[in-house]
Length: 181
Image (cartoon, rainbow, N blue to C red; front, side, top):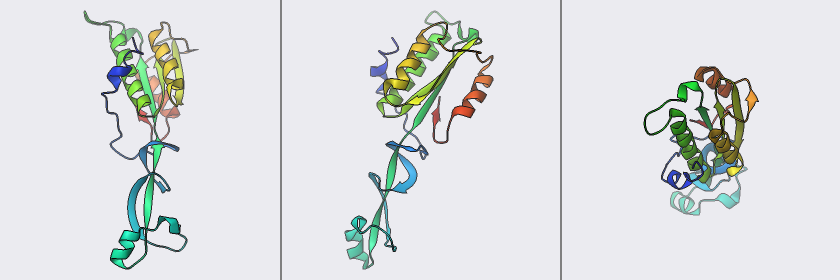
């Protein structure tokens, strides 16, 4: 069921609103400048600039040599923090809260993976936790979906008693530029 949500996830837009600070190349604009794909600006030529980047149109209009500057595209790590503990094992006539959390996490994971981002996460309850650092393509996504669908969690002993404990543990793992759900 979680794998089937991939079709629904294509309608989600989890594009970053700000700058991505990740270090791997990918599909999001970074604040780092260099020889990337996306044009950023033209500026006055400085000694040492690559003459292959000359902006001939601006140079012709201004009479001064100008070069094009590009922004690199970056791959963003996406982290999912999912509580499937006892506090999530109740619900309405439709589904348990933990099942809805699993579906929401799967939708976000598929949306991120389809945009070329690396997906990882932390799934936990009171006794165990499953931790997966963000990995490209479905290598990080499928083990995470498996952990969401299985009970008990196939992970390490020593779960997190509260969401706060799990979030504090996640803060130690997350690098700048990551997106956390």
